[in-house]
Picture (cartoon, rainbow, N blue to C red):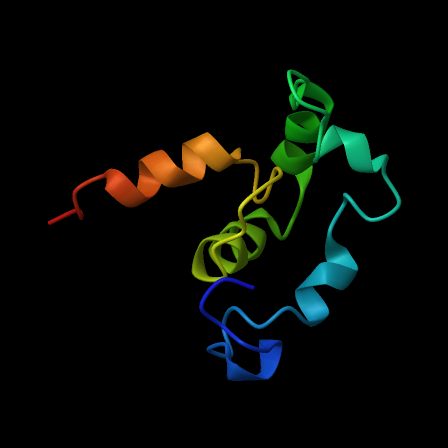
Length: 89
């Protein structure tokens, strides 16, 4: 979990909890969100685009520094690029 030791130590807004119950990815093929090397996230991104908890998912992934997978509609590279962006004024 990156620098966070347990989900109990996460800020309440990003603790993995009830929001996951509403995630559209539940029960979907895992490879849509964690494709094999060289694979694509196309199907997963389609699911994320309709997901009511996409923002919570993205925040959780970024705060917990998820190293792999599609979270909140963003790939590992896209999340890393977001972290490099200057803060909005």
